[in-house]
Image 1: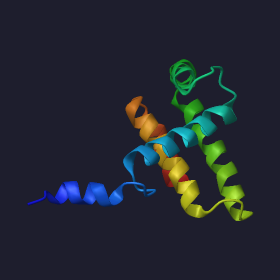
Image 2 (image 1 turned 180 degrees about the horizontal axis):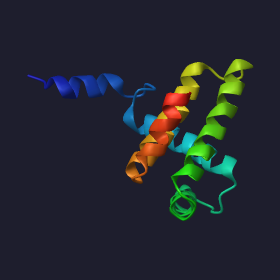
Image 3 (image 1 turned 30 degrees about the horizontal axis):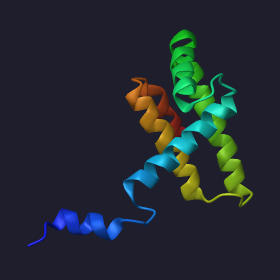
Length: 115
């Protein structure tokens, strides 16, 4: 008898819901956020370290303003029908997850409540 989990995982292969593809999309969105800030670095790892460093140096207020500015830009794109509202939400999810892992969640929570 097959395990229910194994069956669900096999059905999901090749779909957009596959965990690897979702992780890849999240990384792409996060890198676009870092690029919008003009962070130095060739890889996503270098850019993320630079973002964490600048947040520690300049404070959570700087990170909050950077996130808010980026999200406002994405909302404007959604209003112009360049992207969908769910895409905007997915950008925010990627940034929030990164912030939680980097231990500065307050700025992200504030940013979410204002959007």
